[in-house]
Amino acid sequence: MEYLSTRGCTEKYSASLAVIKGLADDGGLFVPEHIPRLEASVKDLVGKSYKEIAFEVLKLYFTDYSEAELKSCIDNAYDSKFDTELIAPLVKRGDQYFLELFHGRTIAFKDMALSILPHLLTCALAKNNIREKVIIMTATSGDTGKAALEAFADVENTKIIVFYPKGGVSRIQERQMVTQKGANTKVVGVKGNFDDCQSAVKRMFSDRELNDELARKGYRFSSANSINIGRLFPQVAYYVYAYVKMVEEGAISDGEPLNFTVPTGNFGNILAAFYAKNMGIPIGKLICASNENKVLYDFFQTGTYDKNRDFILTTSPSMDILISSNLERLIYHSLGNDASENAVLMKKLAETGRYSVDDTSKEFMKDFVGIYATEDEVRETIKYVYENCGYVIDTHTAVAAYADRKYKSKDSNVSVVVSTASPYKFMASVLGAIDAGKVSDDDFAMAEELAVLSKVDIPKAVSSLKDAAILHDTVCDVDEMKEEVLYLT
Ligand SMILES: *Cc1c(COP(=O)(O)O)cnc(C)c1O
Image (cartoon, rainbow, N blue to C red; front, top):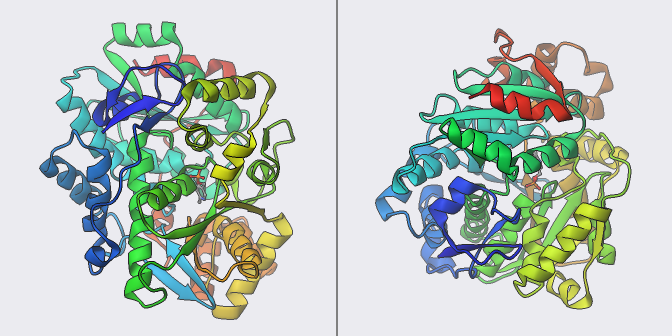
């Protein structure tokens, strides 16, 4: 399997090189030449572990890794870093199914892919005889940053720099990042919002001068953002896994269409579901759940993507995004894999902040349903789910749980809500929704309250923060980000 750019440079890359590069030279994203079909049937996969299913998926995308290399990456990723051997438990609470993707080290779903990325990357460097050190540069809306820092801390031959919007992430998220250990880690708050951070990072990736200067010093960039195929394709595994588990549990029969409702920001998670569907898993609708930054909802309604609007800070900050990077891959596929047409649209997006797709593209995307939840609806959903079944969900999951319930009346397919974060990561908002009297300035007092309400022990990711020293306090303007990168070298 080789990889091409969504924007037209004709050069092809192996999977391992695509992992190292992150982004194509023309600013496009790497896409596989074709979407592979799963070799194993659902029946073959019944009874298999998460790791075994992940291997079935990943071997089709990372074809220049040997079987032994890939298995070793998977074994090292999905181990006791997760607090359950199931890795991604599927639970039924009330009348809804939840796929819990928050059992990794940083209690958000980013761990699912970031646990494996450093292994895929270090293996790729060795395979390609690359001796330069790698600088992982990442913009984060809160969860990627910490998951990437944990994943790359003290990984040989790498350094990692994470930019987050100062004031645009939750208190726990910020504390998780600024207490990060590891001699090769750096965390910087940026005076701007997530899109400012992400756009600046993208510019730096394709900044020739900067890249040349790094090369002279023996470094090269790579990205841990969800645009990297080393993040995207590991996420396909849990959709296959969830389908198989639903069949195992008798919740659906083999072959029956299953909907997934995904709380969406950068469009990486739901795009993985799209790939799973196109690999042969009988997925029905892909319900794209947005918060009040409902640019994707509007896009699926109208066919026009328009980021020219106010950026709203919500209680689901990891979805506060107006430029959903991974949507570019869907657009490219919807254009019959026509990179030059896609490049025209992306140029429009860069220049005017908007573009429209035609009816053929809309038809291609008909299985995507956009639904959004307002802040009130998020609060009501958290309260409703808690009062109905004692289950406490976080704000991002609540956006999806709301969308899932809303869509149910229109479709008889069984559906699964993708649960992307532990409620312990967004305690003030979650407690505020259930019992406002329990909100306080003291995160650890809130954690105790949440433990009582949810009957789920306080995760180590939170309890360990209590005595952790602040190790990073850099704050900069958007136009100073480049200097922060150069300080690393
Ligand atoms: C990143 C994130 C999302 C959004 O996922 P995308 O792949 O960016 O669409 C949703 N919820 C949580 C908790 C996240 O961390």
